[in-house]
Each structure stands twice: as structure tokens, then as C-alpha cells.
Length: 490
Image 1 (cartoon, helix red, strand yellow):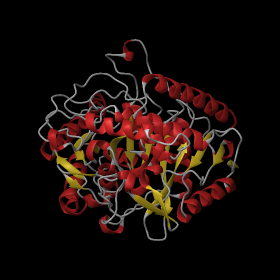
Image 2: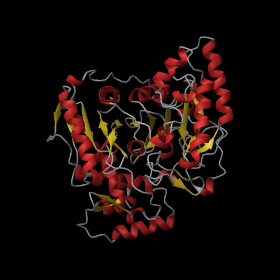
Image 3: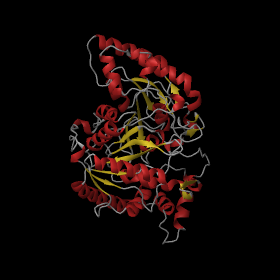
Image 4: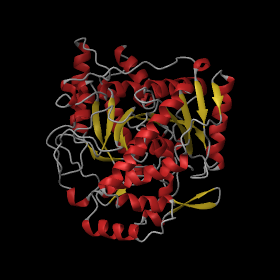
């Protein structure tokens, strides 16, 4: 079998092939490198190449296998989001002023995937400050969607999703606060998992030049990306757990098993649209087809429930808390302008744009009130998950849209079934899981009529990450999953 025939195999399949000595880690790594050199001039997913060290690590992995060593990800090529510190490589977060910052040590998640045997091929592109659903910056340029080079691959882990779709190794890792794992997965037809908040320690996933200290970035998580649902669990098991120099001094992780292992036992609530952020015909269609197929396979499907938290209220709360966090790092003049604009808002303006503006200006008293609302929201979700095992809902309202690099995102517009909507309002769907900190697995479900990938997210109960992951695996096994883009399937 030619090397290139391994390019779109899953990590599970490649691990089995490595164990059976059908392929070597060096061959897999060289295949990923060859694909990058052949195709990435078009895609621009890999912004930092580390090929020499990758091939050296691959040789070490082959030698370890020859000695009989067994590790969960031994010899598998992986890409990592540019925002992770990797010793000896630049970490910029796309910020021009940090273009010369070089990390001195690996981030804890990087140490963990390395210890599991992965071979890091390179770092993937991001938007400025990780703050967009497109992936471009003045240091590394624009990353394109492998299904249509004129469109976004998503963001902020857009380089990782494009790399996976283009066949640059079976695995990647990213981060998520406004959908930055799930949105690029949706736009590039791959899989991603947003873990339960704080399940994966983030030390070293740090904007430069801040020191890599243990911390929790409110709402933000890091997690795995792959071309197969089962591969997500492989990487999550390696990455998850408390920081050994912090909570790990006292605590150990023991994730509960998935609630069920067969379709017939799952109880699923399906949401296909909402007036807060409508979805287009293609997205509604794929959700409804999936729901019908799951029902035929024995899943107990409900289309509405009084237990579902009020989407409009929780979305407004999410906008406030998200922008309160992000606004804390705004330049003083930008922050002052936002505070003045928020003070001038009419009291009755409850648009999502107004809530974002108010969020930037939240004082600590108001933030505490908002946090109380989040606490109550989590209680509502706990009640819902007594009656349901998962919620299937949109990731985004439309398939990937053309690149739009206009500087003010609040002035950008997207079209949903021909009607214009405010670009940042799309935060509503990722926020359904982000605000309460719930695990969510993004899966591909097919293509829009124009050939662009679409999918759904499967939201699960707090710390029960294995439940949405298992349902994702069952769906992939029964109904299919990732389909390579024609331009890169060679």
C-alpha cells in the first residue's frame, strides 16, 4: 500500500497498522510532511513547520515500538494550534507585536500528547488574538477552507480544521470560548470536542508574553480535533486531568462511563433553529434528517421540552459574560469608548449587540450577578439531563461563508436564507454549551447543496464527556462521517 493511502485513515486505524508493522511512524510523518509541501501553498493551514524534529521524534517512536513500548498515541503525527507553547517555536496568537516570541517550554497539554507518543509536525494558523471565526493575521496570512479556498475554514482553530481536512495527519488540538473548536469542525467537515469546563488543564496555552502559570480562563477550554469520533476520546484521555503542580496535588480524574452504548437506550432532545439565531434550510435539513435516522435506529427523540433553559435569556447572559472576560484585555482607549457607548444604550435595548457592549463595561458587582445567573442556568441543565442524555442542536446557522476581513465584526453580516444577520450574533449557538461549561461534540453530517460541509453539536451533561462522545461514535459508525475534499483526496 502506498504511503499516501494512509493519509485519511483514523488514528485508531493507524495505531493498529503501526502495531501490525504495516507502516512506520517515519512513513506516516513523511506522508504528512509531503502533503503539507504539496498542498499547503493553497490552504495555508500550517504556519510553523517543525519537520526535522518531527522526523526525529518519528524515528524515536519506531525505535520505542521495536523495544515493545506501548503508548496511546505512539508514532501518530499531530498538528497543534499556534496558541499552544511548544519549546523552541514561536507563539504569537497572531499578534504582530509578538511575532518574535519563542516559547521556552512546552505547554502542559503539549507535554501530555508528547508523553503519549505523538509526533508534532507543526503549528496551525489562528486569527488575531484567537478572536474570529476566520483564521487570518498579519504574521501568517489567511487560511482557506479546503472545500472552497475562497471561504473561511472557521476559527479560531481554523488552521487545525483545515489541516485535518487536507490530510496533514489524523489529529490536532485547539481551543474554544466562542465555538473555536466546534465552528471550524463544522466548516471543514471534521470532528471536535469541547470538554467540560476545566476538565483539561491549560497551563501554557497562554497569550504571549504572559508566563505559563496554572490558571482558568473563564468560559475557555482546550480540546481535541480529529477526522473520526473515536479518535477524540483517544486524545481527550491523554490531555484531561488537573495540573500536577496545582489541583493535581490532591485530585485525580475519573470520568464516568458513557450513559449508554446502544442507540436504543439514548434519550435525545433535538433543536433545529430558534428565533434568536435562525438556521438556514441546509442546517435545519441535516438536523432533521439525523433526528429521523436516529429515531429509526431506536433513539428516543423529543423535539421540545419545558426543561430546556430559555435560549434568549441564556444567550444574552453569555454575551455579557463573554465580553466581560474578553474586554478585560482591551486597550484603555477601546475600553473607555465601549464603556461610554454602553452607558448611552437605551434601557430597553436587549439586542445581542447591546448585551455584548454592556458586557465589556460590567463592573464586579454586575459580573457577580451574572455569575449567579450562570449558576442557576447550570442547575436547569442538571434537571434537563435527568430526562435526556444529550441535546443535538446547531453549531452555526450556515455553512462556511466567503472570507470577510473587514475590521469591525459588529458591522459584518451573514445571510441566512437570504436575510442578513449580525455576524457576532452567531455566538448564540456555540454559547449554548459554553456558558454552562457543558461538554459538546461537533460532528459532520453531510453537505449543503453547494458542497460545503455542515454538521451538528451533541451537548452532554457536566463532566459526562464520554456520553456525547459515545453518541458521536455510534452516529459515525451507523451513518458515516468525514468525507475528504476532492481537491486534496490524492
